[in-house]
Amino acid sequence: MRNTSLPVTFTTILAFSLLILTVSCAKKPYAEWTEGQAEDDGRALNCLVLHNVNKGSRVWFQELFDSKTIVEGPTINHYQGTSWYIDIPADGTVTIKYYGRPLPRQSWAPEGFVVQRHGKPDKPIDVYYHFIKHPKNDALDNDFVCRYEVQPGDIIPQVKKVKYGVEPLEPGSGLPHGWYRILIDENSQPTVQSDDEDGAFYASVTLSKLPQPLQPMTIEDWPDNQYRGFMLDVARDFRSVDDVLQVIDLMASYKFNILHFHIADDESWCLEIKDLPDLTAFGGSHALPDWDLHETKALKPTCNGRINNATYYTSEEYKHILRYAWERHIAVIPEFDAPGHSRASIKAMQAYERRTGDSSLRLQDPADTSHYWSAQDYTDNVLSVYLPSVYKFYGLVFDEVVRLHKEAEVPLLAIHIGGDEVPGGAWTGRDRKAMKDLFTNNMLELAEQRNIKLAGWEDIAKGIDPEILERLKQSLYFVNIWVSKGMEGIPVVLSPATNNYIDLAYSADNREELGLFWAGFVDERKTYSMNPSDYAGDVVGLSAHLWSEQLRDFDDVTFQMLPKVLGTAERAWNNKSAGDFNRFYSIIVEREMPVWNNLGYKFKKR
Image (cartoon, rainbow, N blue to C red; front, side, top):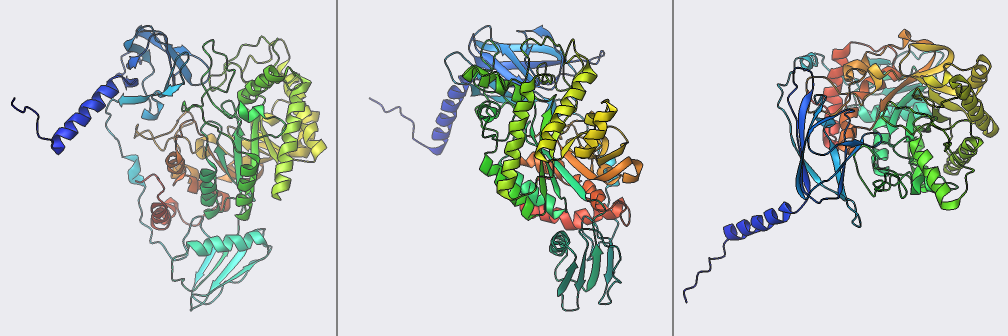
């Protein structure tokens, strides 16, 4: 018999491997999404194809669009928030063509696809995209030029005074907290003067940023604001402890001193509370809802659709974060947003009641017939503030937070209770103002009993009884101003969405970049342009805010932070800076970007 076998070569092995891979992939479910062109009526016909799916399964995904008209294929059903699902009517390939709003940015495309089948584990599947190519307009980027000759004493945030040579500056008078002075002699030896530990720390940061060898000079510097904050949202897209520590290092390098830790929202409850284990066992772990759309085992996946992941910090991890931040002269203010934005805690306490039969920690009244739609598309995320059990719950939360800070030996400056975006329609049959007064009064009582300060979004101090407002002022550490131009008689932290929400996209000119744009676009020029004198009230500082609906990994975090957060760092330290934006941006390019490159950080390059 003649031998018909082929010689075994690398090409043969490669071809055979590709054949096996092709056969294997042919049986593996995956999704394809094709972006449609905008039509005359402003809609776009998009196409979603699900390959190798089984009849009777359910496919979940996340999408920001809020309406669809099906032209072909099975219905796309909205669940809560950004979650949608499709019940598969037949084996094989399922094609859905649907009208939606034109895709404003590629990061708004559907993602987080997961297949759910009876008796099978939930399984994430790959998705492949076909985007429309749009011409890129870089015209606005041409404004980011570097015409300033960077000097040895130029850093971000910029120092108040610098004099080159060995002749020292005359020291200032009436020195504020955080003041420091550095004298560098002709031998490059620095001498530091400061009146407090913060000043000594900021001097060390400045020295670490000056180019080597150190040039003879005198620097005198201090912060104009005692609150220089950065808010990190970990509830929408969870960040690991290591990620948080890296964010803290970045904050310290730009002399931020407050980490506003957005740790509980609709999507997750991210801190272990000793006496409320269901908060994290249910509200900090994620699985798909049951087939009858009840979440009985865990909260539904967050914005990115990840499943079966624990998304919370243990008590020890939280204390580690507290200590790490405090060593870098940063205080942590935890936020538990209420009475809206509370779906995770509501669902977790429903799970607790099912498990134990105990209704004493109930957060939502089963008899409530309210119909509402929150800003993030939830219909079940508002606390029934008239229930005494709500305040029993928050008493336990407050007690645990106080205990953790005490054990970490780190001050608890305040607990942030949110207070924003309670949707219209909540508390049907009850007076809305009376409900807000009741909630505010009861939360104040919890704070007063424990001798702690409260913070909130500006909404918390609006529309309440004058007597309650006066009481609130006594316990209020600050409110974040995010839409208004200030509040008389109340300590405010400037957090305008139009300037300081750094999750907003850099510009409209690159659809491939991350970012929302509901309040416009924010880049380093926009953050730098903040002028605290434009705002009324007792301005205690500024804060940048990084919401995480669009974030998926640490590269996304650094990209949205760098360089735009430096404008907030500059304005928080210096109400008025020497020079113009060109000088500021020139320093970033020459001093900061090489450091980010060395650290492997992803950032916006022009």
